[in-house]
Length: 331
Image 1 (cartoon, rainbow, N blue to C red):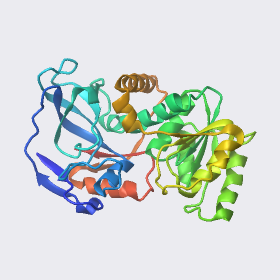
Image 2: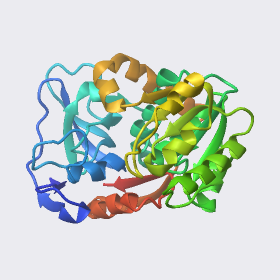
Image 3: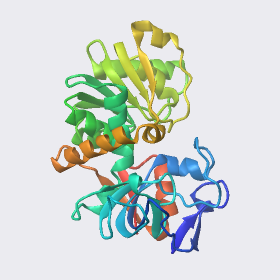
Image 4: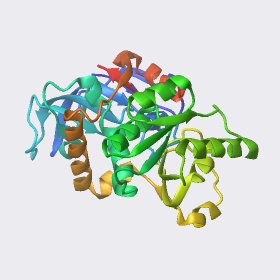
């Protein structure tokens, strides 16, 4: 089979398109013919050795997929050949085939759009876990979503809206704000591409408070970090929850007196660890999300697709932070 392989740390230009032996499913595994691969921000971190886990090289990137089960290993009971599945794998999906544990896959209806399905699990399961499990979001509460037009950010907008919350989107361009509002945000603001220094942060804090209104928001969903985190944290009302989801703008430094004031909560959200520690709850979350999708409450939007042979360009495109919604590699 053909696959993209990382032999040394670096950007997507370091990946090598090469022939590999077809994988053979071990006990409890299924062999999946890849149909599409969702591209996520950690993919670019992983190949640069900047992620919290570092697979042994050589390895194939690609953390989520949609495909068809071609073969089942001994002990597999819930899936069979011909099933269409979505799955999470950490790495290994940017290839023609992958052998993966059965419990990492979820069967979906055969008529499910495969590009949308490949974009579903990572973003929506992260957003749902953050908002429901970590923040205990309730209907009619207000959620500020930073990076609200990106893959995880737009999923958070949709999930929060579907749960009955009021969503305020914070994004870096008018087109991104329009995108977020089309997916459920009731309003928002456009922030600067770079927020550096006290004056810039104070100005952004004022604009966020104005957009949120009232005495502040209940939840901040923050996959951005950098200079955006402190102004967002200041917008929380008493007892509000700031969800630390990622750092596309860099790791922030935040004065902890902001947490003490108004008894605010800063909550780390590591979906990868959560899945390992409580796979049954994650499975329930994913099935709840799939039901919401079937009911039309969620609409995964794939705005750009790349052929598998051009997968490094997909990672580079996401690295540039200009994409709306999700980018998918199609096999």
